[in-house]
Length: 441
Image 1: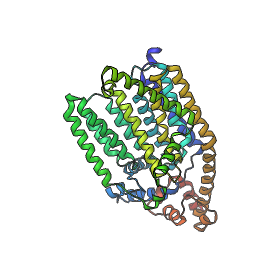
Image 2: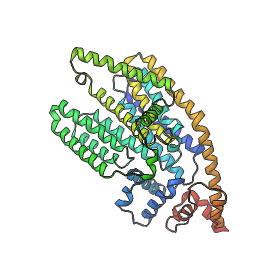
Image 3: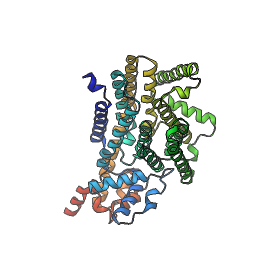
Image 4: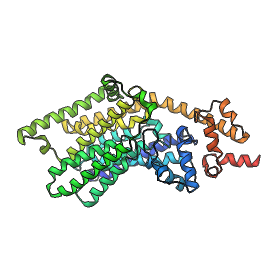
């Protein structure tokens, strides 16, 4: 039994099933099968272009606010094709697969083969909580928010490849994943930045493969230039950015203390203790900490830096907005399983298990006390708005949307246009029963 559970694969399978099952239950209980907000703009245009065979590269890479969400659009088209039409709830179930895979990759990265069973179990508990619990309900219960999932997927997968042997396929894979990162959210650029830093480091460490690492680094540098050329500034969002260093520090500290400042401090202390002790050992033995750390440890440092930079990007871009908006929380929470690794190295495994349980308790408490009331209210509102939309459709009266204060989109005309588009109308699976009722009448 001990030998079975010493293998990462059994934990990875359990982890995937656990995260997906929790998401599926959330979608089943609270998912409302109706398009919401940006879907009436972005997805309607995308699907109309698709069904009329007029889709092109520009339609895929056009800016969506600050982001170039080509990967989300391609994913939406794939789900649309597999389902045979537009079904938002089906898309919610589908995108849960991405997050379940992300959980597995993070687990593998923070679990080198020789870690103890107690630590593996602790890590799994923390990662299930981080990726499974519905504290980031906007992403889980809205089928057009998976650009955040994809940013994490390409970042985590590239860091995973850095842990593998230096084959040609590995270098090609990292380059391709970095390229795809550009077309997720704007902070996908940070994945390339951190990856290129790793490549630059390995140019000097991996002498046998110096040429390959140099080529990869050069390609990543070109990707950074491309990312900058594709950069989008949204003038309306300027008021949300940090006005000065004080704004930035306050928002950053606010994020780092979420959801429980005491537990977070324990994790931060563990990392500082780990780094201090190992650096002292390195100075004593090798006179340089970079040589003392293993490849896996260097990659974990890079992974930690990547998450901290992601947090910094949100802290700057939304300092005068809502930095604790649920769509951003999953990015912050990835920090916890990474810091748990350093806790495991600094202290006994039993202490690591205790911290993992505290992380789970803290996220569960936040999910129940903060997220759940919002989830229930959104479910009620969207169910009510969907009913008014049905009433408007069956009576062919757009004014019903205005009278009932239907807020599926701020502009009722936008909803009405998407609802009745002659090309897309046959593919509205979420309103299929309405069309049958309309024909009967």
